[in-house]
Amino acid sequence: NPPLKVAVFGGSVTYGTDCMKNDVGLPDVGRGEHLCAWPGKLERLLDGLLGGPLLASAAAPSENGTARNVVRVTNFAIGGTDSDVAASIVEFDVIGSRPGDDPLSSYDVVVSSFAANDGQAEPSRRGALYGSMQRFARLVSAQRPCDALPLVVMVEDVPVDTVLGTVRDGLRHAREMAEASSRLGLLSVSYADLVREDAWLGGTRGGPVAGGAAGVLHPGASFHTGLAWTVGHAMLEGMLGDGCDEAEAGRRPSPPAWFVPPAVREDTTPAQELLRYEGALEEQAAACEGGGGDGGDGGDATSAAPGASCTYKWLADRQSAWNKEAVRLAVSKVATSVDGWEATGFPVRKPRRTWQASGTNATFVIQLDPTEGPIDRLLILYIRSYGKLWENSRLLVTVEGRARGSSDPSSWGKIAEFDLPGVHGSETSVNYLHRADLGDTLLVPGGGVRATFRLVNGTVFQINGLALCRSGEKTEGG
Image 1: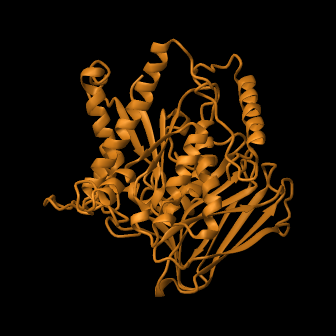
Image 2: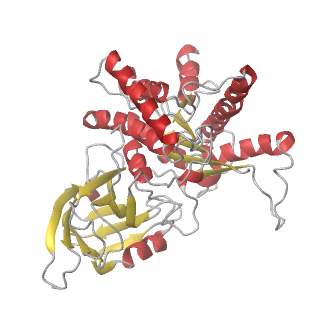
Image 3: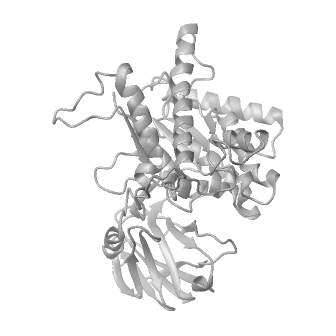
């Protein structure tokens, strides 16, 4: 039943940074990323196509007289994030933090679009990101086990090879995305290829597609329009064309559409890979017997990975802590003391919303006592940036725990301590995710957990998300 629900994950390109740039005189409306970014254009495009002659009855007004979309696209993009951050957001179900939000398992299509940040990653992180790209896809596919949906789409938006120093280095992400999508049976879409054809084969960077896109990390309005059309066409072909072809031929796909192949490994032979593939197919088929392997409703699927859950969580994004006041409330409801930290954000300039320290020794403490669920992970989404303002920035995090049944106020014991740098060598601001292992002290609910965050060096630090969770089953891929 309508609407067809599409979730889009990505970084600043997908968020819509600079998406109003154009050379035809259209005004820059300022804070309008949700309108001019390609996910919003994709929604209007598909809704116009499917809400017209194809599904006229479904597009009729709802009971209260308001228009009812045939397609609804939700943009979960967060600037400066990569596949690793996205995989953990899905794993621990950190999206949908507000009451009434739809779980990820309710979406029919999920799009991953991280070419800019995955493609520019430091060499030391590239192997992990290749794994995270696959982990994200596998976690999303597991949202509705034994169901052909959601359709997972991997998108290469920006041609990083026209931005980075060497073409081969810039093409690395394109190669890895093609490998992963082919292996996992996913829909792969590359608008970047259209830009390359126009820029390289056409012999000019000023062509109708390459103009304003080749050599630009955050292209403008024309790029976002072209990308929306490209993704929309691929989705329709993938969901309608392939399905109709199968039905017309009178056959079921083999392997089944709900099968999720194992992740690619670099250290296995073809024979070993075949055994892993066959083993995974047998295991999933056995688990799906009688459970709707032909496209049922997915049973009791939840948004988080199997066994994963969060007792406390928030993200500084449009779907969770959507402005500085929401960030302040998310922290203050569990904070026991705050000194030198504040929620900040601006309508147009960055940061839009964040929890920020200003001054050395700025400290805040959060505490859950008693805990309401099992906890063995602390997740921190934080910014690493550059420039004089961020020099020597370093945050010290100390986590203490108290087991259930202990009423002694002095029984708090240190279970983890680590520091996080707020600066890096790249001239851009990037979100990093730190996952701290808290052991088994807090796995039994009813105990207490206390985390102290202190800026020990530098004068600024920004946190864009916090979560106290229990990890689930390990998902292949990274």
